[in-house]
Amino acid sequence: MDTDVGALTIIFTEFYYWVTVALMFLIHVGFCMYEVGASRRRNHMHTLMKNSMLIPLVTVTWFFFGWWIYWAFAGGPGITGGIGHPVDFASASYPWSQEMGPNLGADGLGGRITGVFWAAFLLFAWTAASIVSGAVIERIRSFAFWLFAVLIGSVTWSIDAAWGWSYSGWMVELLGYHDAYASGVIHAIAGGTALGILVVLGPRLGKFAADGTPRDIRPHNPWLVCIGLFLIYTGFWGFYVACNVPLATTGYIDGLITGATQTGTTIYLTPTTLSAITVNFLMSLSGGMLVGYTMSKGDAFWTYSGGLAGIIAASAGNDLYHPIQALIIGGIGTAFMYKLHFWVERRFKIDDAVGAVAVHGYAGFFGVVIAGFVLWGHPSSPYDGFAAISPWGQFAGAMIMFWGLGFIPAWILAKILASMDLLRIPKEIELLGLDFHSNQEAEQARQDVAAAVRAEHA
Amino acid sequence: MSTTPIETWAVDLADVTYIYPFVGSEGLMAAVAIALWLLWHVWQLKHENATYRDEIAKHGDDETIRKALGDSD
Image (cartoon, helix red, strand yellow):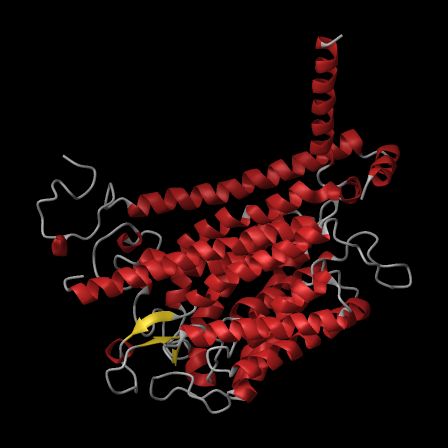
């Protein structure tokens, strides 16, 4: 901050990430609307609170250990390096690190702008947990869900980001893993986590007929669901922009790139532009909406979900795709997730209340894998010795995200909680509705006031 | 005397780092905060269990459940 250009760069970078945080808040407004709209009237407030309380819980645990995991685990540890490899920023990320408090110290990470990076990563963590929330509505215990929220928000997503969404992650170095806008590191892992829980949790009462035929439990308010999805699109802009480094010099990157040209980069410090990702975001959204509308024959929920799936399917490579490639990949990814959702529902009796496993998990998995073919041979990193992008590296990465860090840890925790009878709400509560007691109190209060008013006017 | 490391702003900002109160107590603050977080989960679990228990005791009979199911979605 001791030169005008240096100060402008720092303040611009700080403000840039701050804006992304504010925008990403809208994702959570959208998720809450979407989940409440999808739930039945007797479960509204519980559904709202189940999602809302992940915000403070993931926030504090992200402060306690999630942020540290991200910086500590890039090398595995023990795969390409030990804890804190290759830059020991982990020591500045403990909850007791002085660098976490307001400070006017160094210009970069560990200094005055650490907080906005911390917050942008945290908002990703909320998103991952919130994706899971919708799938399990109307029958999971809040206690259990909030443990899952901490698991994915502050542990498994943080590990996967360290491994595959970092300029020094071992998956990038050894597999050439490329996932610029988080098809795998947010969406596939969240879908896998949701599926791991759903397998143990079971369907809502009445979801399946005795012969196994699924029944359609319609959203209580389809309009609210769709506007919620629309808001998620809006917040997604912040998500995309937060995945970039706005301005990097070749000196800052310190890789193989030569010359003095400055550029925006991905999280891997590979060059891209805001324009590229803006066009591709819109084109992949369009591909998803067009296919969603076509396949569902105009159903609003699946059209909006298709838009989201389209973006997610193209996100791994949206820093590099041509817009028409983004359009086509978004469309194919949406068709894939739509078909797979109904097949899995029928075949395995999985009750994914909002289609989260499909929209995020299947589309995210597809997005990571397809990037391996379309971007085959492109350098995954500006650093020497890193593997190039390949189909096998991307497939291995998708498996790690969906199954290794998504499904398996969630399934294990779900099994433990189920064995202690702490996973699912009691059957009587599910039948009465989670809001039964508060609805009764509200009705009683309404009648008391009405009686009092009548008495005053008698 | 100041609770922060700053006694005066008659300084070169290049020499200033941390500006929050009670620098040096971060370990204690972290320990307290983590303990409070864990205790919150314990309290919440007890509260949730008690809520379900009370609700089932009050409203868990067949007739109330049947009526609740018939009332709305």
